[in-house]
Every structure is written in structure tokens, then in C-alpha cells.
Amino acid sequence: LVPEGRRIAASSPKRLVTMCMAAAGVFTVMAAVVTVTFEFLPASLGSKILGETWGGAHSVMVPIGVAAMAGGVVAGALAGLRSIAAADALLRTRVITTPAAIVLPVGGALLDGGRGLAIGLALSVWWNVIWFWKAFLRALASYDNGSHPATTVGIDQPVASGGSAAGPQDPQDVSDGC
Image (cartoon, rainbow, N blue to C red; front, side):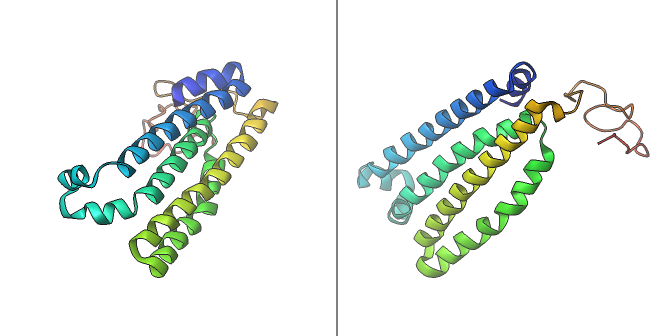
């Protein structure tokens, strides 16, 4: 997604939103299909697949599925942020969302064991949806207004320091202009 997103962003940043939303939709639908399939799987078949753990696994199937669906939505925003090389926005958003990613599942586990952990995980990933899409749309607005770097570093493109996108050729040369 990222290489295609980069190409799209270079010609039409607004089309990048469409691509990211489409990707998020596909990932989310795939997660929903898997969740529904396992939720309505007959217990006899579930037990054949997971053995004795089927009962416990089935009890957390819906919250884990909801978390996976949220992960699909987040994936679209992440692809967008990476496509426009918005590392600063990505890092800032990770810092903002990390406490919820720890507190909500742990709090849920303390309140209701494995099921509470799964519910807390789902809540934390949906929290991420809000923040990562907000970060992507803000970063894209800046990118669209011309504040993006004049050059985009790709896998095979040289960087200003004389190295490559994989890193400077000389270990002493760490000034990459960023």
C-alpha cells in the first residue's frame, strides 16, 4: 500500500484518502467475516479445531473480532501516514495512544479476566482509530498545502548525506538533513 500511496499522494493527495479508506474497508470486512464465521461455528467443529480451549476462545471471539476490525480501520490511516512520510505525526500518535493500549486491557483483565482483557483491547484499538485517522488527515492537509519535503526518499533513491534510504554509507555520516 505504501508505495502506491506515495505515488497517489504525489499526484493527488485527496485520492490518497480514498485509497486508505478503501484499504481500511477491505481489512475491516475481512476481519468481520472471520469473526462471524468463528462466532457461529458449531461447537463440535470449534472443539475439533481448538480442542479443550474452544470454550474459552469462543467467549472472547466477539471482542477480539471487534479489535481486529478496528485494526483494519487503523491500518488504512497507518498506510496513509507512511505514504506521506509523516514520521513525526506517527510517533506523536503512538505516544498518545500507548497509555490506553496498556491501561484498558489490563483494567479489563482485572475486572473480568480474559473476557475483560479482550474488551479492553477492543476499546483501546478503537481509541487508536480516532487518533490515527485524525493524525493522518492533519498530516495530509499539511502535505497538500506544500509543506511536505521536496523529495521523497524511496528504497533505491539516494539521500542527501551520500548514503541510501537504507542508511548512510559511512557509519560516521549520520547527518541526513531530516
